[in-house]
Amino acid sequence: MKKSTVRTKKLTVPKWQAGLFISLFSSDGGDGFNDTEIEEVTQIINEEHLLSLVSVSEPQDDESTLEFITHY
Image (tube, rainbow, N blue to C red):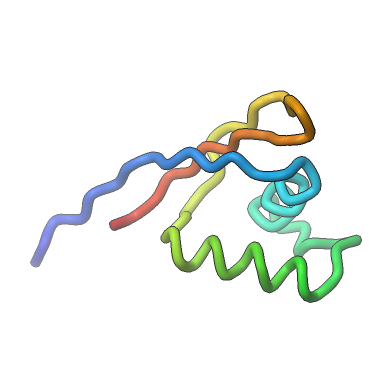
């Protein structure tokens, strides 16, 4: 069996999108966001193989940097 590698990845996203990532990773289900926004973020989660949200930076210039555990 091949050994898995776990790494972290940082993404800088608009402040509204950071709120949606937080909502989805905290099992809130994207409450308050529309379906198109949820589909967009879900696609990023799947394409980037994001497993868990580790940290969120304070917003600067309406952007936040999120750090995730990712699986390759």
